[in-house]
Image 1: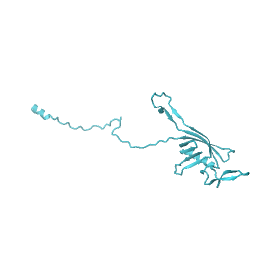
Image 2: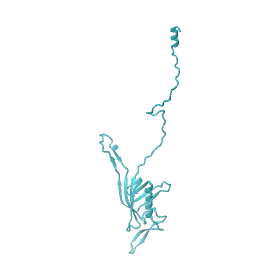
Image 3: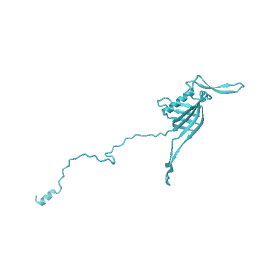
Image 4: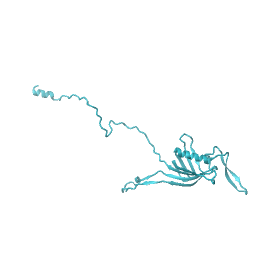
Length: 205
């Protein structure tokens, strides 16, 4: 099992590419660990930072698919039929209602995914990895492979963080901000002391 699935950004339906077979799968997960001494009693997990996971998968896509979905078959109906061979033996063969070039269609689709930076999900019998971008894509074909296409896909997982926008309250004066010079302000007249009348009587005024 080896398939890619993505939802185009233009609102088109979800697309899925089923490869005929996966030859090799390689998954990597690097951990960045501090080189500095760690104080006794501190949380060790604070000193280990997992990096984004990556993978390399080599698989095959052919013009005689053995899977149920029909990406790249140009609307042809693909079915499995039993064919009897001389001697009485029988085999299951895949037949299509019309000609198509599935290998070319898959090659073009993966190129578009890579160039557009399209996030996708990769599934194999071992793992399912979401939010992946293509880091490197290579194909190999020669006269012996015929209508089959060997692909090597290197991908890297992207960690997506959610953000929330909030409205900040406006303070009268920011901390550390210098006070504004408002210029000279009129002074209020000083009020007479409360005991001014008593003082005048004692002085005979």
